[in-house]
Length: 106
Image 1: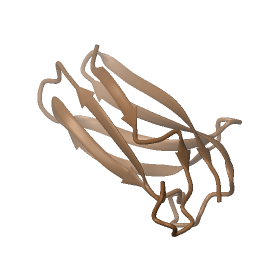
Image 2: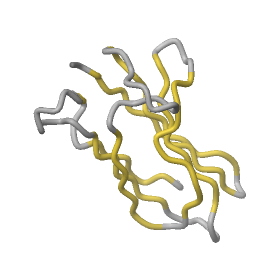
Image 3: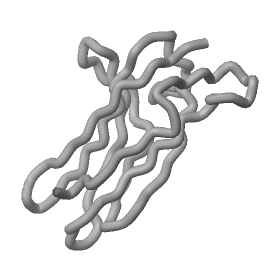
Image 4: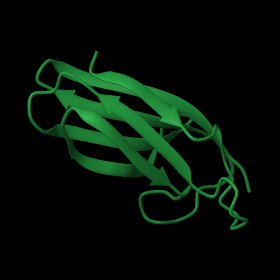
């Protein structure tokens, strides 16, 4: 398996400036990759509409950590609701993905 783990600091994100759960820490482990491959973390609403990318670039085998503040791809705050965080890694053997559902509350 390419994606060994995908961990979130919390299942609830509350980016209201009070210092508690204002950012979501997303950690993931990638294994068995030969060189750098494309990897993205994207946000979708429950209807499957892509809301934006949290991170996009290349990755090699290892542990990664990124932060998300509840904003879409254009920098606008997303409305409260349930969202899907999706990690996608393009490997020479195909596409690997992992999803987590999070709540965005203000």
